[in-house]
Length: 320
DNA sequence: AAATCCGACAACCGCATCGGA
DNA sequence: TTCCGATGCGGTTGTCGGATT
Image 1 (cartoon, rainbow, N blue to C red):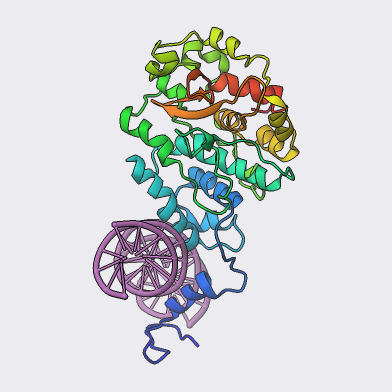
Image 2 (image 1 turned 90 degrees about the vertical axis):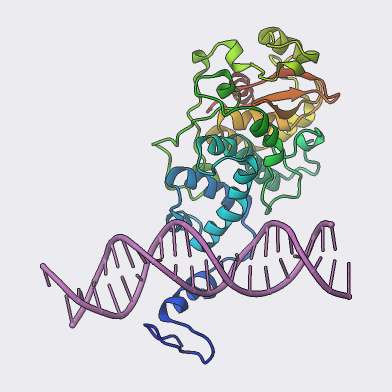
């Protein structure tokens, strides 16, 4: 059908060998997969792009049936769109870590939810009017996650946190891809590598449980007494209720928590489950920090890396 | 109903590299 | 060694269909 070189092979159609080859590779090839990218595939793309940048063909090698063109389009139409709305560069460290902190946890959640046989999924973050991005809407398996609304106020109101600042630790940034990250990620769990978050011992309590927008703390108290608040919330006891326990006994999710999640991701995922027990805790972003709110909308505490590790550890996710 | 906007995706373009004559 | 066509790759544009005004 197609000849090589600049040859018109179809009357009315200027098809060169090159364009024919391209069409074959991107469209006609029998093993090309159709349809929206799954959460797993999106996760792989996000992770591999963080590692390799715009190496579309290389990324495509890890997504059987997907073309580099398709991945490139996905990145431009969905990922870069989020970055534009946040007024940050899609390749910036800030955006990469926003993806790690908010988007990837959501995809993990989607994957876990899809794998779960539970009839009734746990309450999600969207129950908090502030936050749509982190918890999923339950119907987003193949749609682009929406993180921008959750992050918009952060992007608009708060300068990009400098490394080492307390804002930095509230929404961990400047996370470089792990050099030991696996390239054999044929499974989603293998594709997601833990981010090198600051060690618990490296931070003081105020760093980890700070709240840049202190006016929301209990009506405007400013920096909180983290220990006292966490204690008062019963987070030490981690009584998140039977629904959450049931959900997180799901082996698939625990696998992800064990092997894949960043600390923040684990925290997001865990907290997004809400549950009974000590009350329903939903996340929203305020001034750069993840903030837990109770269902009355009253901010009761901030929760960051230490709590995430603690939660994940106590729930069997000791790997993070 | 028509116009406009917007997202998704196929296709095009230019450049770099490879490999055979 | 050089030339040249084929191939690979990433950036960009064009087109189409659905949603919105």
